[in-house]
Image 1: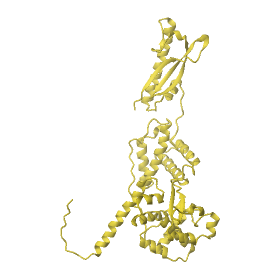
Image 2 (image 1 turned 180 degrees about the vertical axis):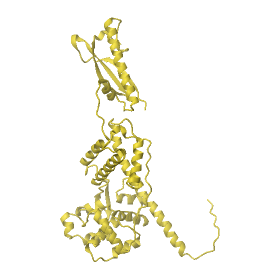
Image 3 (image 1 turned 45 degrees about the horizontal axis):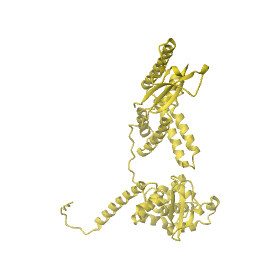
Image 4 (image 1 turned 90 degrees about the vertical axis):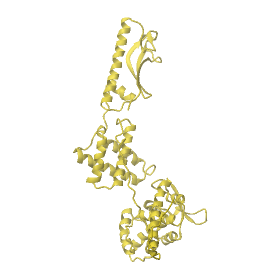
Length: 413
């Protein structure tokens, strides 16, 4: 990209050198950003032509000084051309450093990624969720493995991070690692964020992601039907461990809480709401968005059931919730016992709440508020699920209708 570049020799009049002479400075300006460097020369201010940026007169001393300044100017232009040819970031400081012979050690790809992750780690609980930091650590490992696999080295310099590098990395994620489209896009998005950090700090001349296209595929989120919810909550379990998992899952079906939010749910977050009934007042861990959720009767029954549970009391929680990994593993057993063929995960419970609420006429904006969505666009995805459900229900209705004569029906719009 072309940048406005100019040079100016001027007197630093607020400084006085030997015998009252004034130092001459060179100002380098790139896109309005300035950097100054001393020419190591002094002159009587009365002998200086400000408009020309040179010494006045034809005396030998003036000619020698002007020749010297011309030489400095030529050197700066030469360094500017070198930076252009090497595709380096051109700034006022980079030109100044090149002119002075100062070379900055180029940073490596993984060095910058580690720097980004270390900063993120310090902001966990303040700006980022712990799970977000964990995902970036996983992304770092994938990138490190790719560099080793593709280039047989431990790291590469930032200058080697090109458009071709990114396309090869994408191919590696999809083929060698066998990672699906949306997860691959997520890892590439993480890398793009790190690259932006490098660009903003002038560690890399340009963003190699500029012409790189990424797009998530639409994924239909699983949810339980009313019939399946009924099977779930009415089933009696002989194993208390599975009964607890079922109850926590059911609680999320009736509240829309994500796993981490039900895991952290404390008794003081159960409060009496504006209508006199009991509500959940909490803040989503993922987005730090405040959310208020009226408690449905089934959710209240589950809270009441575990109010004296020793494990929940010790942890200071409303419900006894295990790790996400264990919960999802046990939910497979729960689904089998309840005769539900769908794969149950804690996230399915959240989708079930959203779908159930929208199906029963709760406005999209209200559902979004209860789910703690920052944007209504996130909630709108569930409306597409409702459309699919309407289509499926209509197929059932059609199959039960009295057979009619087949005839061509023409619709006019």
